[in-house]
Picture 1 (spheres, rainbow, N blue to C red):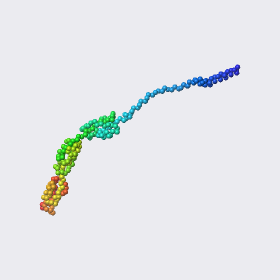
Picture 2: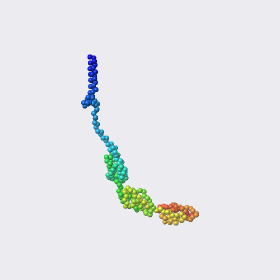
Picture 3: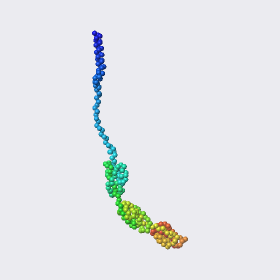
Picture 4: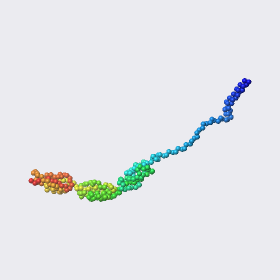
Length: 262
């Protein structure tokens, strides 16, 4: 009885072990695979919204403020700002601004304003008119000055030259009459002054001869001072002022120093 029980127990254990060992092999033979182990749950993929393109900040940073063009000529402004693509457009003239003719006195947009386009429109000071220079030669200096300044020309300090023309009259003008010149330009005048006379030598002659020589030269006998002198005869000219050889205007008085009577 005991042996039978042992045999039965061994057989049961062997059967169970065989089934455990052979079951996977049998399953593969029959084409059946054991289900794979359950995969770990993966989180759902969240689709992100497409990135919004960055704003083009280059356009904002590349905008220019209008430069100050006032006081410049249009050509100079165009040359200065051509490389930045700015277009300077002359849009009219203005007179009476006091600015140099041809220079910019107003602009749109104003200096410092943000440019919405590459165009800047400008107003320039009106160019001076061209007039015929009037004829003033032969006029007295004051009369000639008035004739020129009344029509818009400027007359600086005149130049004076010795001439046989009437004293104080205009003997030359630059530019000449009939020449075209802009108002505000300069007309220079050359005015006559008496020709210089070289004082003749009358020292060493007698008074009558001295008077004749001075008058012939266009000079006048001035005061006559008498000096006691025992070496020369009466009316002998001892000295003269101005001295001989000096150049003086016509009519200048020459003072004589002569021997007084004994």
